[in-house]
Length: 638
Image 1 (cartoon, rainbow, N blue to C red):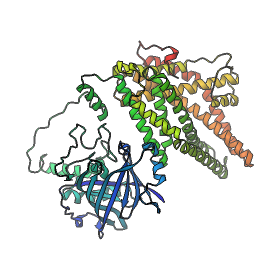
Image 2: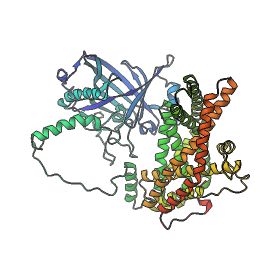
Image 3: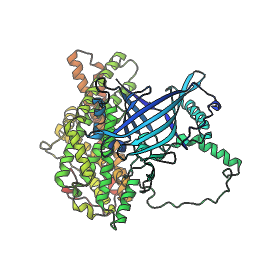
Image 4: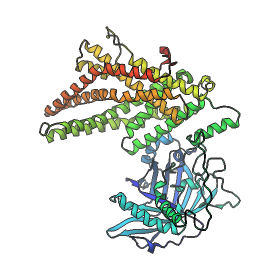
């Protein structure tokens, strides 16, 4: 059996080797029940290069306690969760196949081997209110062995976790404030780590961690310039919070310190006040650790960063995000299919804009495979868009125009079609071709396939070139004319359907289809420019204010064009449902009514499209630098 839960907890460090004296009878507004003690042992698994740790995912086999079995702990932003798998009866120490499949997009099929063994003596205190248990306070004495380094570390920590999911934010805050008052009085502090595995591997240390054996080994956390809590590449270790995620657990302590300082005239107790020294904001204050490490590496070698370094950072981040959203899709997280599709399209956009900097055969091959992936994800995303649009249409109808029974039939049809699309996504993510795509993208991100031209460009010149290419593509698509004889023009299936369903003044069906294709391709190009601009900004590469502003202009028009393309998606969805209802003999009045409304919206949108495209071109040219020129067709991207 598999269970999944979202954790609402806070962790605290306890200094020194001795068990702290917690005065739990001082807990304000709550009482503490009888403590329960457990001895637990957990073996943590990861790939040889710690891919799970880099993705803030921890896999463990726990023995003892109430949750004996296999656990997958993960963190997505400020949300932490856990998935439990019962041990296999025939082989309890073998990793369940379902767990392996969940992690496939992160491990890429690599073996998982033990990296640490953590023994914990836990004392659990139930935190009780008038109407039952509100939370659980755990005091853990931890001994952890790094299996690869042969080092044993020890520390003590506390964890407060809410026991109920029906608490209001105010009630939850009162629970944590009461617990923290007692913990801080005993010398505890907010933890610098939310995962024991990170401390076991010395990815996240702090004063609370002591080395037990071998005795001659000293802690090296932070000596390489990473600082506690960061891997060598600047990424956070398994479960470690990003900057700002610890704020909530420090609020009450800061408030208490503020009150204490007020009483002492702004001085800490027993200390003299010192003048405040302002720190100037340096040029690279916005850079992430990976960027700073890359810059420092080049500075140490006497070489300047290049366009190849920028491209590496762009691809590394996007591939990592692709794998993270793959994991979220497998978990069934909300909006995860959409976000996975966005990352796949962002990668393709970067490749299209970087044609001069990636070997042609490599770029074309990866672009084609990413396009196939986006098509599968696109089908599922179209079903999501249709479900959202269906609710909007149903709610907009006058009372009684669409019966409750008819509305329910439409919702059931939407759910059924959505489930079919979701199964297609899962099949794709489990396919050998998809896993090979992820591996090849990681190889490219490591620089395998870059041209020499990438290293010849400075970061600024590279950024201006790739964003300029993406923006040129928007202009080229928006300015494409509709030919008099459109019979030879290749269009998508959706565009063909639009040409068949609506008529426009002075246009035959094929010209209408081509008009929609131009609109649709312009919107995709506008999205690509946005993705490239965002990727450059995240890699701290400056493409110039005007080009960045031009990308923002393209993004604004992307939404206007999206209204029209979404109407086309919904029109086709309703037509598909109508055919299904006809085959099964169900009433088609409601679906026919909605279909007619959507056709009207689509036609009105197509009538406005030429003006929207003209305005886009005008605003885009106004935003671009005066020296920006349209590149030859072979450099505009596919």
